[in-house]
Amino acid sequence: MNNFIPQQPILTQLLQQQQKIVISSHANPDGDALGSSLALYHYLKTLGHEISVIMPTELPDFLNWMPDFDKVLVSYTQAEICKQAIEQATIIFSLDYNALSRVNEVGEWIGSSTAYKVMIDHHLEPENFANAQLWRTSASSTCELVYDFFELLGVWDKVSLEACNCLFVGILTDTGGFRHATSPRLFRVVANILEKGVDNNLISDLVFNDYTIKRFRLLVYCLSQRLELLENLNAGIISLSMFDHNEWDIKRGDLEGVVNYILKIKKLQLAAIVTERKEGVKLSLRSKGEYSVQEICKKHFNGGGHRNASGGSSSENLRQTVQKLKDIIAQNPPIG
Image 1 (cartoon, rainbow, N blue to C red):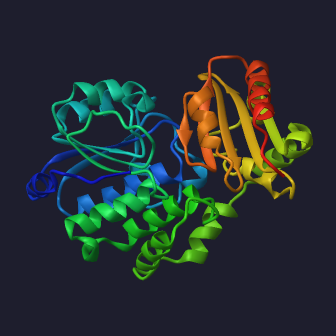
Image 2: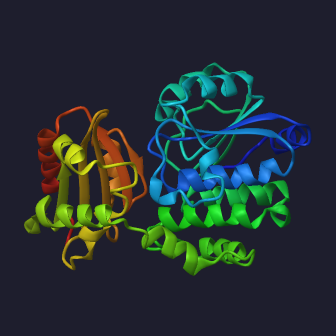
């Protein structure tokens, strides 16, 4: 479905005057959350606006090379600064999320704000909290939609290389290295981004080949000790307890991409990593072909995403959540 910004002239007029702008994205930010937020930040700062980029939780360290990564505020540790920025904001951009509950306490502050609100997102069933939306579920990523946003405003020729590097990161990571959620149109967008001077090989190397020794050993542990192969169901599940988190001192981003290794096994069609954290049990699911993990996350785990890449959460403990997931898969196993 499409829902392009209906008040584009209003937003264009607002951006012609100096504004206090907040760019926000979801908890546990990934490459698309950071990429879309920083790409928009880099464009808007050229217009002279006062801008704050806010995330609810810590950032993934493996992306710390991204331009102005260190400018992002984290509400979990900088609550008063973030709250004040939102209270003073005249425009708020909500990127890569469509429900205020996905940004923790930041959502409450945004909900109470009188600022002009813009949502740019590609997930299902958005809440009606924004004055304007750029929403398309067929988009590969929010970064693809931020590219569309620049095109709608007629400013693509003014978008910097730094912003394009950020867009490329979000598209690259949200498609799993162009393995899912792609389209002919996306590759035309990527071609336009690359023509700005983006170094595809360099960024791919920084994203996919930047393991520390600890992170690599954690990957080995996950695959050798914590992976359960359900060959009769064509699926594999990695589960990590709080003990594992503490033992390995797992930080945000350390588990990025681990779930994808399960699908390297030829027969398997579904992969999951289930992690027990202080804030509850989280799930990240991947699949091949037509099998929809999006439906599993949406119906059973208060989540969603793409057909082949989705996430969710559970109020049950780790053991119960893993068993529930097995039962769900058993009711509708993927065909190997």
